[in-house]
Image (cartoon, rainbow, N blue to C red):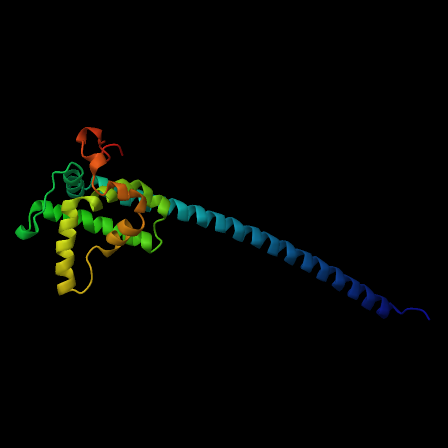
Amino acid sequence: MPISVSDELALVSDLISAIVLIVAIISLIKSLSLTREQIAQNNKQLELSYEIQKAVFFKELYLKMFDDPDIRKAFYLIDYDQFTFDPSKLQLTQEIEDLDKLLNYCNLLCSLYFNKMLTRQEMRPLEYMLTILYKNPHVQAYLKCVKDIFNKEIGRPSWEHLTRYCENELPHRASLSDNSSLSDNSQRTDHFSAI
């Protein structure tokens, strides 16, 4: 039985439709492949952007600590054993205001650490300062005095993140608790100007 012209045209039409469908599928697969590559490339760019933004954020935090004259002055007084505190003579002085600013800033940094915004590695450059600050007996007396006031009036401890970080994350620094290895000021270095 011979094939009619209309059957031949229908066959050619079906063949062309099949070829167009195959080309469309190949184009779709290629398009999806390119989209997947673009997504992967975008993800890499986002990760890099995040790392850059985090580095800038950390740099700003770090520089704030060392550029702020009140924070710097408070730390120097403690580091060179010139800060004294007598709980029986609690009064607001410039030294106490500067110490509060230093303690609040350190508490903020420790809070960022506990909220996973700073890593352990990012906290390491601050450990010397945190150790000197927290282990100083006059700072401890001030912390205790303020803690007692906060517990009475507010019901929560003051500088809780700083305290938690220093007590739990700096156990290897316990040997500095008496500051005996740091009592000779000639052995100290200027940590702020080294930056």
